[in-house]
Figure 1: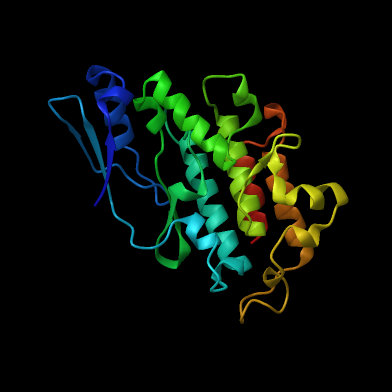
Figure 2 (figure 1 turned 120 degrees about the vertical axis):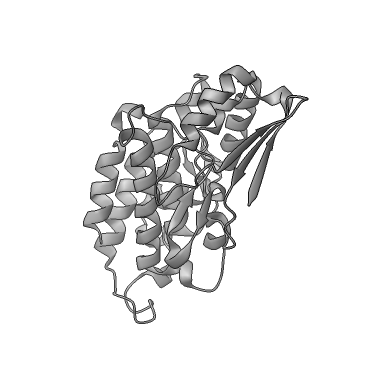
Amino acid sequence: MLLRFLRPTCTVKLDQVVPLIQALGSIRHPNLVPLCAFYAGPRGEKLLVYPFYSNRNLAQFIRDEDGESHKWQVIHRISTGIARAVDFLHKGMQKPLIHGNLKSKNIFLGHDYQPRVSDSGIHLLLNPTAAHEMLEGSAAEGYKAPELIKMKDTSEQADIYSLGVILLEMLSGKEPVIDQDLYLPSSMRAAVLDHRLSDLYHPDILLGKNNGQKPVSEEIILKFFQLAMSCCSPSPSLRPDSKEILKKLEELA
């Protein structure tokens, strides 16, 4: 089992936590990490219990050099699974749930590279100070939507921005250190400005480099890149919603 400890000084009061835990604990989806148990201690400490996944998280997998992370079929399977998880949170429940801390370190890989998104809704359990600190941590890692500089509360559109960064991260294999002028991973900035698509993806993704896997064309890679870029639009209103993202990813299969 995987344990997540929340300090008493970081969380809202217990009477507020309990209904939130009940709601989070009821969520079940093949691409989401389920909350299995919850413990509240006598000093206000709180413990969340999740299943343990022995495989790497997505951030570690992207940085791996064994070549699996450069296969289009694997990239597409992981991307689609993450999109399904986000779509379920945003559109598949009676009351939409904003993830609030979507990043590659919070995505575990199960059997056959099926992704499991963790930490859904954790920000709801935190007091304003701790929630802001978590948001700033995401900003430092490159996943924070630009509008959150002026806004305190995260949103569905902010989740979509983070998803777009993850898609770019998988395509390029580069860490998402944000350039605030473009709100894009700075390692991709020159390529975007010069329209050099070949600088935005690992060369092994393309035709003939997939070790017997179904080949992929540069046109498909371009469509994937354009979808990721639309998710990372500086304007929240211009970002696609989760249904549209999922539909476009499924069309790229």
